[in-house]
Image (cartoon, rainbow, N blue to C red; front, side):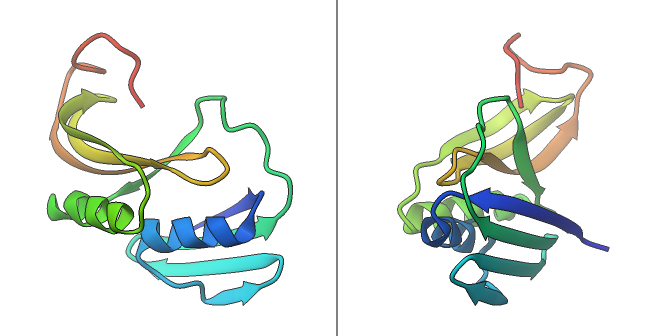
Length: 132
């Protein structure tokens, strides 16, 4: 089983570059108005359609849960190596779990987190702010 997402990309080329770095993969299909990434880890089918992207400011975000703590470090290196700014959180409590994570934003303003759960928690967040 895998997840399928179809996202609108305001600039398809810059979006393809971002998702190459985020997923560590090349598109399986690439056309002037479309790109398709197929990845096994995470099990994802990500389609990008060229078009006018909507507003990303509604708090929606996307995430990739990694199976090993080093997966977050790998994502940080890959994103930084490709020149993308990242926000790194280490040992933060969020969504009832203590996590290490890295945040990056795609060219259309969608926020993505790559995270590893260190431990479950009875608290939603550690410092009273709204997380996630």
